[in-house]
Each structure stands twice: as C-alpha cells, then as structure tokens.
Image 1 (spheres, rainbow, N blue to C red):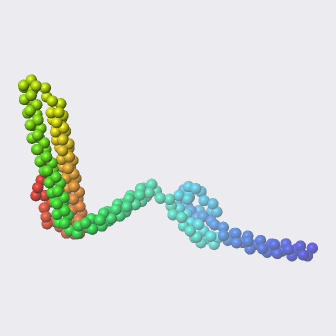
Image 2: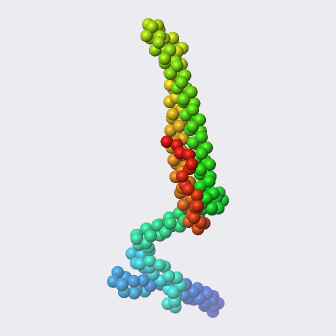
Image 3: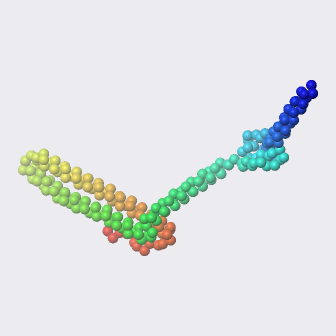
Length: 216
C-alpha cells in the first residue's frame, strides 16, 4: 500500500512540471477588435489577423508581432516598386553593354555614319543594277513592239525574258525598300544610344548626327 502511494507520488511529481511547462509555453494573442479596443485572448478571430496582432507568452511579454495584412493600394505600390527596380536593373545592364561599345557619344556617331554609309552604298549599287536591267528590258520590249507592228508573233523566249527582267527589278526595289527602312531604324537606335551616352558619361557630342550622304 505504501509502495503504490510512492509510485503515484512519483508520477504526480513528473506530471506536475510537465503541466506547468505546457502552461508556461501556451500563447496568448493581443489584437484590436472592430471597435479599436485592445483584446487579449487565447484565440484570435480570422478577421482580426488582417489588422495585425501580438503573440504573448504566459508572462504577458511580446514573443512576436505579426504586422497588418497589406492593403490593395500597398500591394499595387509594392508591385510598382518591384517593376521599377527591375527596369532599373535592366537599364544598368544595357548601359554597361553600351559603354563597352562606346566611351563617348562621338564614337557612336562615327559608327552610325559608317554603318549608314555602308547601307547607302549597297542601295546605290542596287539602283545601278536596276538601271542595267531596265536598259535590257527597254531593249526587249522595243524588239517585241517592232514584231507586233510587223504582225509577227512574239517568241515565248522573248516574253519570258521580259517577265524575268521585270521580276528582277521588282525584287531589287523590294530589297532597296527594306534597306531604306533598316537605315531609318538603325539611325533611330543610334540616336537613342547617343542620347543615353550623353547622360551616362556626362559628355556632350561634338559631331553632327546627319550623315554626309542621304538616301531618298
């Protein structure tokens, strides 16, 4: 009988500290209700969590503070700031690449004039090709017209040559049109880079943006 009491006493002695520990570790919540009054409770309504709250220990000390949930306006502002920072990072990367190519705006202007000159030279060559082909075409068309006036049948080979020459001229004209658009796009891109270089380097260009040769 005495032994059973000892065992019970020992068990109770073990359970008591465990219960006290559990009590000590239990958390309480301090939050504001819908009327703005502070409330301390061992539970917290879901709606109150959005307003932020404190987690207290058994001694009433703040163990952790949970901030209020962000408002829709704050979320929008955060996303806008994230986007702004992303754009700034991208701009810094683009500036670094630009500075690797050119250290002064005038260097970019010289490169622009050189590249535009190359494209304009190609266009002039193609216009020369059109002139040669047009001369051949005029000759074939004149021969075909003479045949028609004389009541002769125009050979298929002559007609095919006329169509081929006309097609060649159209193809070259399309190439010239495409290269003229490329010149405009390239010029705009260079001018944008030159303006950015002036801002990044703090240097002002001394050369003209206009190339010496222009293309209609």
